[in-house]
Length: 158
Image (cartoon, rainbow, N blue to C red):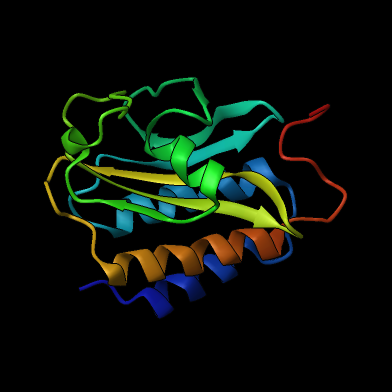
């Protein structure tokens, strides 16, 4: 079992004093990817005002753009509710960037009521993610949001 409070503490230390969102997203993607077993993709999609655009991640190459009306990432962004999907093949509009992925956890990134993007995790194991994972990754996303300067957009000129 992952010690999420400890992982969140590591995330806070890693991001301490840095507000550049791309640097922080890159480091958090790596931290989570290497801390959690049975994860084949962990990373960010940033909202450009229209759709989600891939940001820093760890794993195989990813889909570059995701519309808000499609897939698990789109659902998380559109509803601003974390999506925990035990079997992605049961989701009619799932976007298969990596055909090896079987389960997914997507946490919306919201600051001051504004959608900034999502943090996405995939696993090649059906049912890999639990409510403990959901709560823990939501804490990690909170650390990321707290690191952001109010005036700095995630995607310049968005």
